[in-house]
Image 1: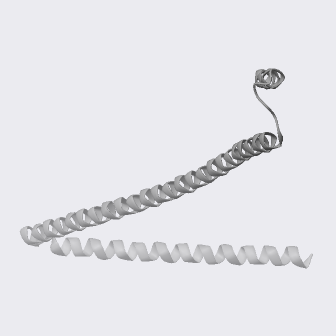
Image 2: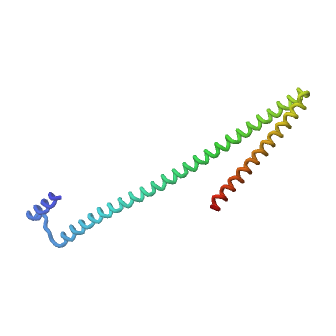
Image 3: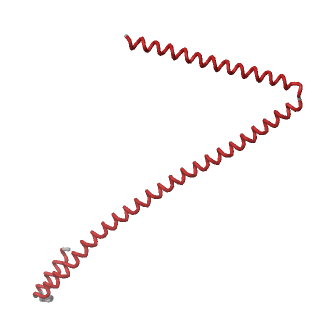
Length: 154
């Protein structure tokens, strides 16, 4: 920058460049245009860079949201498909078990009454066990109620 000023002074001193009002106005106008252009260019560049960064951030966030929703939907679809497969397999296994049991009953009719009696005994034991369990819960709750009332009354 200093060499330009030295060259300008040298040209003016040797009368190579004659400086008058029009020349000063023209040089001032050209300097103003160059300064304005550089200032506007810097401002415009920073504005566009900021805008592009904001757009990039928006696009990245949208893509991450789309990815997470698609992954979640794929997970749910896989879980549902596995559940349906398991339920069909279990129903087929249950059907096969029922068929095999019914075939066994047909093969061994002499044991049908024995199986029925065992079934009824097991069901009565289960009902007795559930009855006893229910009674024990009732007694425990009454005992707890009495203890709580005693603590409250004191």
